[in-house]
Length: 129
Figure 1 (spheres, rainbow, N blue to C red):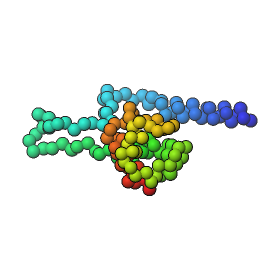
Figure 2 (cartoon, rainbow, N blue to C red):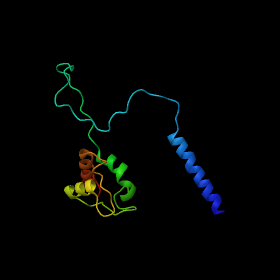
Figure 3 (cartoon, rainbow, N blue to C red):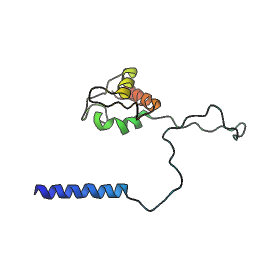
């Protein structure tokens, strides 16, 4: 019986991997846009006078938290497989820990941009109570 459960679980995982990573036959010649775009120092020369371009959307700390933090700290910050962080309000300390890590938590300084780290630090300090 345990072998049957193991075999069925393995088959389900493989099926999900094939579906999630499968090629739907569609091809595109358009490269993916970078995750974060910097604002130009001045408008491009081709920009029409008096016409402004919209700045990129601000980075949402909640989105960064959901993608990188909630898996361990819980969606509400009250803990999961790692320590609770709800109620932490020192943004500078949160920023340092996110960037460099602490104890068993890895640092995200090489994974997240400074703007993403700042956004998630503000989110934890101000929204997770």
